[in-house]
Structures are given as C-alpha cells and as structure tokens.
Image (cartoon, rainbow, N blue to C red; front, side, top):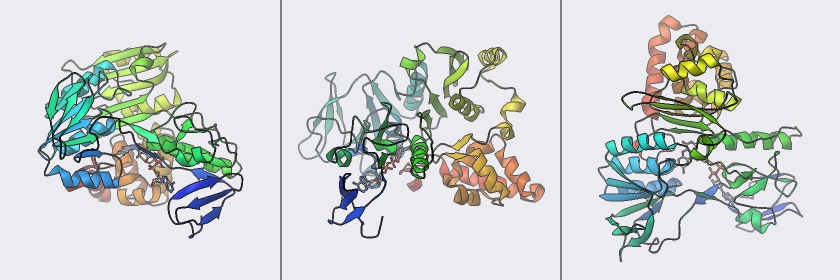
Amino acid sequence: MSKNCCCEIVAIYPDNKKVYDRLGNSQNYSQLVLATGSSPHVPNIEGIQQSGVYTFRNLDDAQQLIARRTRSRRAIVLGGGLLGLEAARGLQKYNTDVTIIEHASRLMAQQLDDESGSLLREHIISQNIQVVLGDSVNRVLGDDGISGVELRSGRSIDCDTLVIATGIRPNLKLARDAGIAVGRGIRVNDQMRTSSADVFAVGECAEHRDRIYGLVAPGLEQASVAAHTIAGGTSRYFGSQAVTRLKVVGVSLISAGRCSERDASSQLRSLTWRRPDSSGYRRLLLQRNRLRGVIAFGDWDESSRAQECVQRGCYIWPWQRRRFLRTGDIWPVQEATNVNDWPASAVVCQCTGVKLGTLSKALLAGHCSVQALCVDTGSRFGHGIQQTNQTGLGNRLRSTCGHHEKRSGRSRRLVDRARKGTEGLLFNPFVPLS
Ligand SMILES: Cc1cc2nc3c(=O)[nH]c(=O)nc-3n(C[C@H](O)[C@H](O)[C@H](O)COP(=O)(O)OP(=O)(O)OC[C@H]3O[C@@H](n4cnc5c(N)ncnc54)[C@H](O)[C@@H]3O)c2cc1C
C-alpha cells in the first residue's frame, strides 16, 4: 500500500482490482489480503444501550473499563468464556463484587468438559467471583445508567457495570459489499483464497471449512499459507488445532484439540486421571490410540509436550496409557523434562506462534538473554521462554551461550523477571496497573 491509502478501507472493487479508503483515495492491488478481524457480539437485550455497559475487545474498551474499575462496586460479566473470565478477574482485583453469567451449563463451554468446567467454577468461586450458569440476561435495568439486570430465570441482580463478553462476529461488510462469498466469516479455500481469486482472507474474519478461529496462532498459520501462495508456493491450510491456556485466574488450565463435550462423547476414547484432593484433573482423548485432544486442570509439567502431541496426532503406546492412568503423566520423568527431544516445529509461545526451532536458531546466532530472544523471535515478554524454561530451554540458553557458571544466576533472574512481568499480562489490560 502506498502512503496515500491512510485510513479505513471502505470499498473493494475486485473487477478493477482497486480499494478505496474513507478519504476517497484509491489504490490498485494485484493481490489483496483481508485481515479485518472481528467485532464483539452484543446480544439484543432490552436496555443494553444504558451507560455502564461495556464490551471487552480493543484498547478503547480496556481504557474505559480501567477508568471505570475504581468506581465500580458491583459488576456483572455476561459470558463465561476465556475473555469473560479474564475481564472478571481484572475487575475483581479492584475490590469490585463480580458475578459471571453464562448461559451454558459450564464455564469455557467450548474448551472444557463437565468435570474440568466444574473444577474451574469452584476455583473461580474461591477467588470471590460469583458464577451463575444456565441463565442469561433478559433485561438491563436502570433509567439513567445501569442499576441491575433481570435474568431469564426471573431473578434480578444489582450492578453498576455490565461487561459483555459473548463472543465475536467477523467483520464481513467490506467483503460482502464487494460480492465476495461470506457465511459466518469470509469463506476461504485451503489456499486462504476467497471466492474472488486475487483476494485472500486470514485471521478472525476468515471462515475455513466452516470454522472461525478466535486465537492468534491459527491466524498466523493462515497468514503464512496466504503469503506462500501469493509468492507462488503450493502450501495448503488444513485447519488448526485450537489451543487455549487460561492465564489470569491463578490456575493452570489447558485445552488443546478436540475437547468439547460433543467431541469427548463421540468416537474418541477418553482416559482420565484425577488428583485425590481435586486439585488436578487430566483427560486424554484418543482416536485409534492417537492423541486428538487434551484437557488439564492444575499444574502439569507435560502440558506443552502433550499439546505438541495433539498437534501431531502422536501414537500413545499401551505402556503410556497405563502410566497415565496410574500417575497422570505420559512420559518417564527424564524424558518429559528434556526439551532437547522436542521437534523444531514444537510451538513454545501460543500467542505469537514462535517455534522451538526459531528460538534455537536465535540462540545459535548469539541472542543469549530473554530480551534479545524476544526481540529476535517476536515471542512476547518471554512467555514462550518462560514455558520452555521449565522443561529445559533455560539450560539450553545457558549452555549454548557458553557461560553456564557465570551467567546462570543472571539468566535465571531474567527468566524469573520475564515470568513475573508477564503472568496474565498478555492481552490483559488490567494487570499492568496492579
Ligand atoms: C481481551 C482479549 C484477549 C485475548 N487474548 C488472547 C490470547 O491470550 N491468546 C490468543 O491467541 N488470542 C487472544 N485473543 C484473540 C486475538 O487477539 C485475536 O484472535 C487476534 O487479534 C485476531 O487477529 P486478526 O488480525 O484476525 O484481527 P485483529 O487483531 O482484530 O485485527 C484486525 C485489524 O483490522 C483493522 N480493520 C478492520 N476493518 C478495517 C478496514 N475496513 N480498513 C482498515 N483496517 C481495518 C482493525 O482496526 C484491526 O486493527 C484475545 C482477544 C481479546 C479481545
């Protein structure tokens, strides 16, 4: 794009291969990539336009909520998905009474099964956040600003703030107006091409094989296929394994691959392990003994490796299945903790899609601190490094740099600092102000 095209694009003319911006400037293209993202879904609820009702999507939303949080005493978060939980935790930190209302029968309904959903609910309640399941808001109450909500069940709850976190709607207007095929998102084939041959779509606006992904990693995979195709390559995108890690409510929770109750009760075979005191729950979902999904509530050293195995559909041997049922672990301790055994393709930072091979190359090129690795690889705030450090990358960092004795203390401090500075900070607008 030239500098002339400086603001929002308002029209695409695929026949002439031109786009127009809001100022009326036009720009020719030979190939066009749509990465217009999505907007928050706001349900059609009576009174929802009252002041005190917020969405939770972009920097403006975050800034408005941050300004609100000191005044708010009772907040309701509508939607018990990943963002709803993060918003609830962000508000609750500032002594606001928070209630999450979720219409499904469990929290994070798309990522968890009933048992992990129920453990998460107990954990959230223990953090002084109320949870109402199987209900939704019928009406927003108040004349001059919100004073409460009336639920479908008939119950009313007082509040001064309502945060809507009920999912996303892809931004389709540009594509639709240009005559490009859309469904729930902009429809794309395995090359990420839309129905208009020279127009591609990637990220949250794209619908591939009936799926829309609301995470960064799939968008990056799609972008890489689109770029390869535009450069004349033959890459294909076959879909992504959704991996979700909950970061901010003080518990480790991971869900990767096919995990929802629908998947879990299909032809997938399920192996379950529980810690006797209910502080840990792990479930493997296997199809012909290949790992297709994993859910883990509570700390688990093997979670990154298990996630990697879901992505590759690894075979889980009978001894591993027995071991898992007995101990909750799949690999012998030695093996599980050695990051050197991971393939270069192992993703170590879900947020930016940085792979182990990329980090290794950066290490060999002499980037020996967490900061240098972040700058070189694009991994944010050392998050990926923080994860892998637990399983050996910290050692690799030190030994590759050849200063093991001299640097180990400093490297450890850097990693610790990265860990402290990043817990819950990625995308979470509340934490930096705490
Ligand atoms: C609070 C929050 C926390 C999140 N946490 C995580 C997380 O921990 N991990 C994770 O993987 N994902 C997370 N996500 C989701 C992640 O942010 C999105 O999946 C990702 O940003 C989608 O990227 P995108 O490029 O498709 O869309 P976006 O990031 O939304 O970018 C779209 C861009 O296109 C611009 N645009 C739209 N229309 C036009 C137009 N007509 N002309 C010009 N520009 C236009 C928009 O202004 C926007 O800048 C989170 C999202 C939120 C809201």
